[in-house]
Length: 528
Image (cartoon, one colour):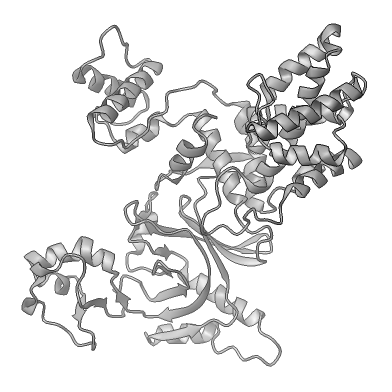
């Protein structure tokens, strides 16, 4: 049996490599190249069974795949249903147990599933983007998977081995550790997922309404007979659903309504999976100290050796003027800064108003300056001829009323954004704080500044002079002086989008205000 299975494995892999991973019967290997390289290294011997009996490790890997959701994975990505069917035949039927073809498929599926798990635990399932550091590169070739599998077969420590490929960040493990409680009470009923907004044409409009009707039927808010309901019936059904959810029943189709209809445990689990994958895009080794901004959570944390040294509420960009995701470090701080209005704000907000009221900017405390820094009389400018920008700067002078507040934190980035204080501090009391033009406003700006100065001083080399400390910063602020404070030892900054997180064994979900999770869901997790 072993020799026949080995011969079959070699033939099956040759066929798979020539046919897109297929090994027959609609079974496709996901990692056919890596799987083939492993078997080549062991002379195509079967590794999960011996003389018609399972090796103990086969049961361990099978059980891990069966419970893959505990790691934010989907069992059928690793051939679970197909392998389970084959395993049942081999375990319960003596005739099937003598079938080398079944043992061949079982061996290939378990190997392919195992290397696929390693890939997904290490790199995730969503593609690396421009801010990702832990990218899969040429150093992770097929030898990486072969060595992992050989290590498992030698040491026989499955859980310990797999954990070495997962991120070390505390946030990752807190989220992962909350999955069991989530799964224990998970409602696994499936509901139609609505794609919104949709293209404004007849085909897409009708497709959306059809999906909406189906979704409302699933919640028993609409009964569809032979004829589709008219607009009055549909509005009544929406009102009924809104009433059941305890919100104002207006019967209006909106983004918030679609979000509510798309909120269920199956979709929440997908958001858990997406968030775990986002952790996999971080550096494998994070700095000892760094600033962490989670936009959906509306918070900033300063991490110091796995301990939160500082936490603050933040205000981030509106959905139309999103705060960007980025990796950088604090280069300097400016006390009592001026604010130069970005061109995007000028074009979208200020220019239309200047065309009807040239004095508009003066009323809100902004000055118009020419290229030499001279103040421009707005009544002498023909605003009507500008549409994509203006040949002037619009600035707000420093002071307590400045939009940036009294302190601004600069870091290198291509988006012209920064962290800063604000003159509208009452907005931190709001639960929804996506309100800015893209910059991140920090409630505890003073404490953050103190920490940055302390970090700069702590990391100073012997005899290295640090120009500013906490006392000198307080004196500058007391004098209301505009000053640039350069940072020699820059504190790393990560601005990220984590749609959920673990806390005390439970999972907290945040509003997907930019639709980032929805975009990833539709592209990579729609059929999970």
